[in-house]
Length: 163
Image (cartoon, rainbow, N blue to C red):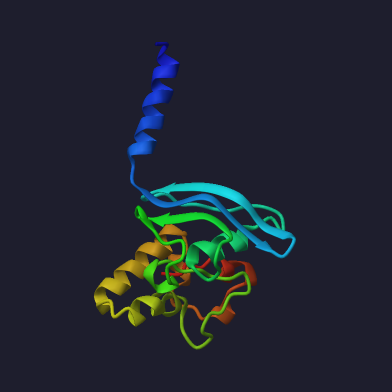
C-alpha cells in the first residue's frame, strides 16, 4: 500500500474511532413545500469546535434549532454522545443555543451572562467561574468578562458563548 494511502486510511480510522459528540444523519426539515433543511449529515468528534457558515436561508439556524430540540425534524436522526435524541426534550440534550438576535441580560456582566445557565443547573460557584473563564479564553474574550452587554459592539455580543 502506498504511504499516502496508508496515512489517509489511518487518519480515517482514527476519526471513525474517536467518540462522536454530535452526529446527524439525513436530518431534514420542511415547512409545507419549503425545504428549510435538505437532508444533512454532520459528525462532530469530542473536543472539536464547529462553525457553520452560509448565506441567509441556507438552513444554519434550522439545523441548530433541530440539534437543540427546539424544532422537530421531518426526517433523519440526531445522536449526542451516541444516544438517539431525535425526538428527546431540549433539556435532555445539554446543548445551548444563542440566537442571532441575542438576548443578554443587560444588568449582568458578560461573565455573569455566560455563567447564568451554569447557575441554573446548580453548578458549584467556583466550578462555574472556572468554566466561564475557560470558555472566554477559548473565544479569546477574557478581557470583556466584567463589561456589561451595552459596552460591546453588536458584532462582539453575538460571538459570546453560551454555557
